[in-house]
Image (cartoon, rainbow, N blue to C red; front, side, top):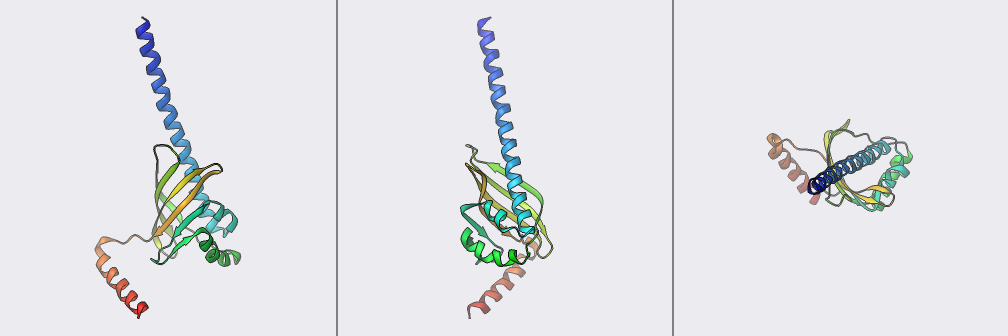
Length: 166
């Protein structure tokens, strides 16, 4: 009987461990969703303080143009004149996937977005869990390119690049 009790106790402990793991993952994903949603809302509200507080100190923002790779400091310098005029931008997430590292301290995400100027966009990035909560370490904004028109668009990009470099 003692062997059966030990097996039952181990089984119960295993089940509790699994349930706790799912709970921690769900809680982390909720917190991460909130950070990304707040990031978008702060941009829409042109709220510089809140927007940049959500980026890690060594955070990087990658824009839609191939030349746009900004450190947090560089991006703040670029963005603040617009935000001070009350000019933000609105991206609405329509679908988001979040994956956590095995130790639960790093999150990777991708999301589909809608924007009035750029239409369908994609955001992806990395968040780190810090002592003050989740922070965005990298955000990459892109415009997905349908495969059926890729060659045509790439040709136009190449023509544009040739003009710019002359």
